[in-house]
Amino acid sequence: MMDSSFQHILPSKVEIQQFPRFQNLPKQAIHVIQNLEQCEAIRAELEQVSIFGFDSESKPTFQVGEVSTGPHLIQLASVEQAYLFQMSPPIWSFLAPFLANPDQLKVGFGLKNDTHLFRKKGFELKGVVELSKCFASFGLTNPVGIKNAIALLFRLNFPKSKKVSTSNWARKVLTPEQVDYAAADAYAALLVFEELRRLERLPKDISKELEKTTKPCRHEKL
Image (tube, rainbow, N blue to C red; front, side):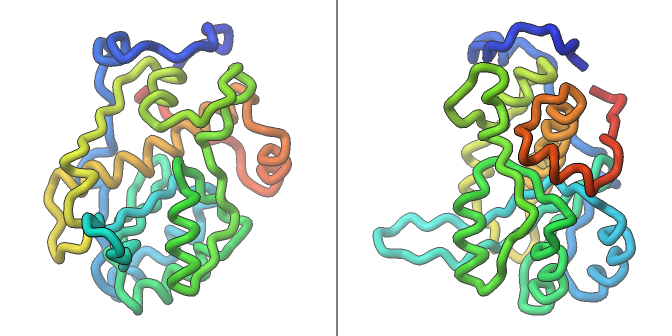
């Protein structure tokens, strides 16, 4: 991990390409959830998590006027596990209490559209932390994306595939590339949050919310 005295500037695209590649969770720690039985099997695990890395994916729309039917995938991650929920009415009902629980923080990047899509589905997201706006203490007033955040905090290259991001997230069986991409987005968001927390650079309003949570998680692999 970087020392808190590092220069508070974003690395260039060229510099980022030279950084070591971000290491995602191992495959055995990434769980694709497709039915209610699988949900119930992890209920106790989810209830113990106070801070989730969070993201969602939707099948892209390409035609003018086409309305998104997503989210089709919801990702929740702890520092040890990632859960990818392929959405259906029973799974929506299962996740609703977790999504609406303000005491279980959901941290991620670019969550404004997620909140909009969830509301259209009749679900409210509470306890959401938009990480892109948490870098003001670094002198960065514009939103910071996940790739730049990982580069700034960890000096790692977080690859983002446009081909995968715009793939069909509503498909019944996700590809290995989709599974890896989706898990990494949620997992990396959590690591960014925890590093900002360790460096005491989270906005004050978020820090107050953290008084309700456990101590910062540490991840020794970075």
